[in-house]
Length: 302
Image (tube, rainbow, N blue to C red; front, top):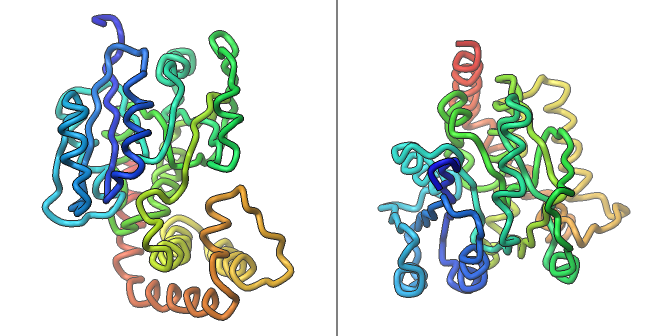
């Protein structure tokens, strides 16, 4: 254990008792020895904290006083991990299942390529669970490719990256904060790689009872991401892409993509109203968004 890097697994939770039962059971089978788990609860009302404390006493539980959203909950866990001198931090959704070797299969990539800041996994949707269970031994067979973004359900990040580029932007609340972080990471000169190590993901485990809110946040934050990180042409393209995803009746439905399903959940009229509402929100909040854009650029330059 002394020679192994210290890994902290940060698990944000909001009324996730239905998913924690299988997710923590999967995590408990992890074969990597030098890791610690931290569950950050965001004002749950479903007794999920009692469930964790009773059944998984080794998991450190931190309770937020207010509902900070996914980004805020993850940040609470990251700050705790950094204070505990973690070498690497995993962001671990409460509605996933992992292979027992999920850490040791990928952690060596950071040593092989020092410029790598973040390593991700291959997402298996809930409809294709048999693929996850049919995965054979991957030792010595891990493949990885450099990418610009990853599924946000699970990834492993070097602590030095968080100290360099900062934590998640809590103004996103939920959805989009990971893409924003990935963008900052790349601008700072780090690389993101995705492996063929699978992770099974239920999808929207913490928001399945708030589907209208989830769709609204997805539209709102997609526009905010463009305003904060991209040029005017790409901002316009993002708006057109949202209109196409939400309102194009001829666009084929992709039932195996969680992001697409979230944005095509309702009929054209409701989707159009949500997109217009997201535009209005971003116009009202344009000043803090642009201020955040400037601060990020300054931090990365420094």
